[in-house]
Image 1 (cartoon, rainbow, N blue to C red):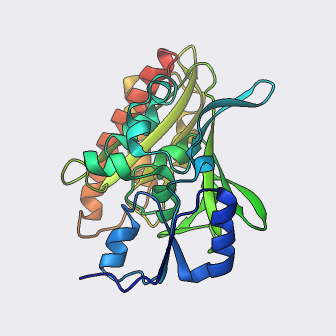
Image 2 (cartoon, rainbow, N blue to C red; image 1 turned 90 degrees about the horizontal axis):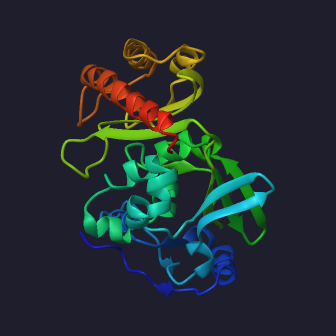
Length: 297
């Protein structure tokens, strides 16, 4: 099937020009960056838009690197046009934020990672996508911009449901800010898919902060099983204050499998997903603990 006819194509070179176009055309326009989400929808005619706004030339959306927002508060800023390839292989990500690399290296194939962007993935909000889980685990802040101003959202508030976010028709996701990890913190991500690079049957991301092998805090999310990633609050509470051992991590994985609501679909039954959740929950927690002990992130 071929896309419906497109009447106008714009390639703004500045963010201001892009926001003017979004303000003027509203629901008639769709943004394209890597095209890994939009193009399949256009071909299937699940999306019908007469106007395309190509944002690949906008320098303001390509920012990437660490910066200080205020004394003592350092963040990693990832512009919406940052490609999956960068997230999978950049030395800064690998050394301090490896959970992001864990997720990005699983996305599709080489061609998709070369073209796909973090902004497109997060705004598309596919429940089986890889990047939403680590963005949630890392307690990120996302900035959304329109001609009327700027809005900041926690990752928890950004995702509303199945392919739904807070981004409105005249807005664009500009960047993601990730807090620099505190000492003794580690995070990890893994997923199960039918074939390598496919969407998740189930995915797990975890962040753990240790002090002398005692869990000070944790943040755990499970993806691929619900309309949006689900936080494992009971598992976090179970780990709080405990001395971490292999037995404790196995019990935590059991708690995780018990508390997370999973659904059956064409990829897997809910029973199979529960089995996978115990396995991946244990492995991801173990990896996060290992990184915390190594004082890496």
